[in-house]
Figure 1: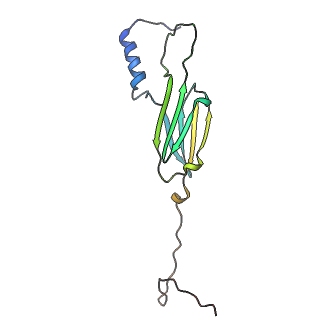
Figure 2: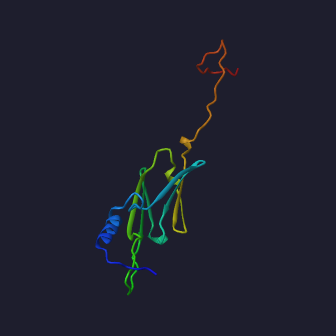
Figure 3: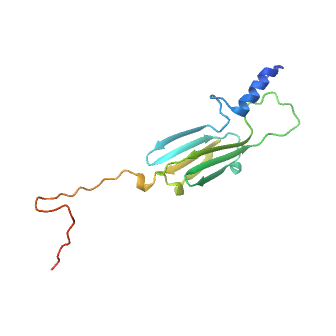
Length: 146
């Protein structure tokens, strides 16, 4: 059972945390990011958010994630309100080494997961070394086929 006590300072502190956020609970959606093989993976926690209210945009190299958690309406008195409601938005500047044309997005169990492959031009590659003899120059030569 939840007990509600009248403490205006605590209520003001809770309101300030919801609006400004704290280091423990930021006002934006929490995120984890890591590299997994040839892809970067981003996960955003969005519990209680319907998939239809999530919007993803990429413009140049800026990824914008928007989501909305609607307030529940009803004929009751709230005893505790600690979960943020309303519109959430987060922007990330992504490097040129990612393939922004092939972002894969999935949503399950309140977690939005984005998988962004590394661009082919940014992947490590071997460079062949040609052997040049004493009588050969490093300059390419045309070969006479006659």
